Image 1: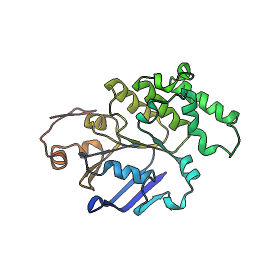
Image 2: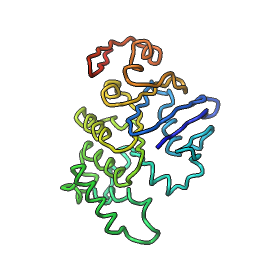
Image 3: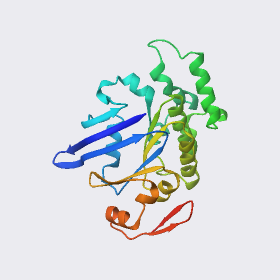
Length: 249
């Protein structure tokens, strides 16, 4: 899949949030969108998952997103919702995960055996089989995170979009999430605050500030003293090895 963003702008009142943003997302890669608070990261992602109408051009494989039906779009693109969305829910784990099959469900008909087979496979793959009958409100943050990932996976999408998915998670669950995204057989685009996670797990980074993309490329190209100081206004220390980059302040 290829997602193209051209000349995307967005304002709230007189405040410009995005200012002519253009970007390309293509292939089985993990894309990280980084930058200080208020740089436009979340707003860009919300345009990609069609919460906001595009004042510019967003195309999926050459087709404008507004010409793609909601059902067809949902079969191709999954959104990992914030953990709080289901945190107090009385629904059971299997019931929440099952909602990911909704784009394939025929009106007024129950989920069929093929749906249930996919759900069961994903529950096992994400280590949720033993928790399938637990109520979501009884889960830990890490368990709930796995439920939301499973919900995306049963959708069988080509793309997963995630907004700050590592917030409020212990380091163990942050790493677990990033590893799961690395194993995903498709494209993932996520916003991140943690530059070390971005350095270690992302294939491509987009660095944003004040509604524009300052730079895009591999982590070693973007996570430099010059770029980070320009975006964040702070001095950082960068330690590079043959295989990894470490960021310090």
